[in-house]
Image (cartoon, rainbow, N blue to C red; front, top):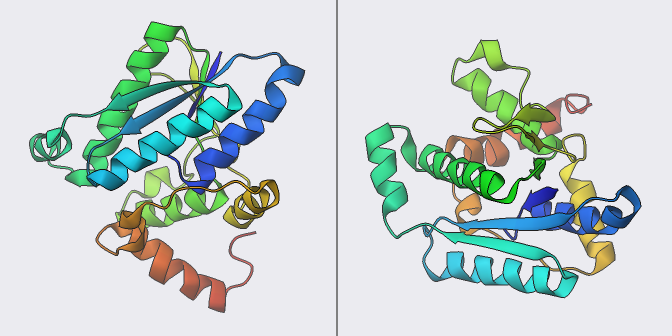
Length: 204
């Protein structure tokens, strides 16, 4: 039993489509999980509606979760880790709850190769040299037997976008990804283009 975490963005939509293509050949049950963090008002709600609509078209069961308004901000203050960290904490808390309630074997996450490289750069800049290996392709749940898997961790983002273009499938764009308020976005918008321009071998 595999649940695909779907935000509505290009990566997670691609992963959902790919898993849906593969489920009969590999004999697994597929569902989707979509978490509305309620951080971007109407835009967040539209993302959730899009995921639910896409799942209905694919005949894939969708488990939707909407976090109460302001809860992410309150948790960020109590955890002292910022909005992104609080959103991630709540998201994975919901994943674990849903995994337990639905006896899931795997939760599939849509991180790609670009995400992996950005994650390594971010950890390096934060001084976490002991974790420079980056995200793992597979890691266990914290609260029950089962695993998070990242099937696209070696797939470049360009391949993801080409796949969706070929399939003629639209996706949502999180407007907060266009801002430079977060370290990850600064790395994506400023550091990665600089490395691409001057070190064409660095992503190999």
